[in-house]
Length: 385
Image (cartoon, rainbow, N blue to C red; front, side, top):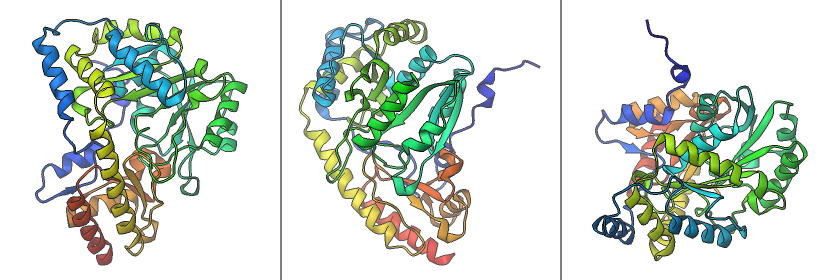
């Protein structure tokens, strides 16, 4: 019998589990997958076609085409006020997931402890485990918008701690870290000489008077922060698989070596599409933000109108974390019964960590019509309990 690697120890995503079950059923409303329901803007598609017609069908530099890295550098200066050298401090990756994976492999050693929130996006602990490191969880609470409490975070530090992972705006909760909280996290990172991974893929999706802050803009943090971003959410480019990392040149140079051995480079035409996304008109992005804000209101108002359900208004991303504790069902029971009895797909909160118990995640990256119908079905289901 062939003995396989630790890949066998990686659990299956609850998101995909629910998605796969639903795919065998008819008349289903899905709030499961965090993917924009918009088509990639036409100018971006046309830029990829133009690149292909111009013969851009070859390998690119392992770190990505320089015009795209320069455009990323310019945007990060605009967003965060931080200068990144496009030649040494930025790499273009196959989506945000490869950005995370390569940067973790570069930074982590066997046995390093990596601090994560619980609940958190499912891929983080899995990627940490793949690297041979150890995920250490800090519970986050609804009253804190599911963002780190700096005091609890500090208590989780041990001599083995190597890094803190921040996801703001957050999947699965929609929480957004305030500038004040980030400043406290920065003090902890500096005090204990820790790396920080800042996953900012939802940075464009914040609502009301909420302002996005990046920990990279805090003094002395650029040097110890690996910034992860992607074109998938902001520009509805999930299938194009293009993202980037910005960080210390020692990290980026070694990620570039790894990329050479993993996939050589990101698809060349995709890189030209991403360049157009950054440098072209932003009308489509702004329209998506407006639509998500409308949908967020529908979800928030709808869920809070249902007896025994509640949710805090999400500050960012396109997720709501619904409190179901008053129904008396576990997260898994609620999600499975809702699917089978009402044909509505949500993700059990335990799919994002043990402290997700008592919650389910809804993605409102779907149409107003689906949301309205889904809320009706959820209401009828809860009434029937």
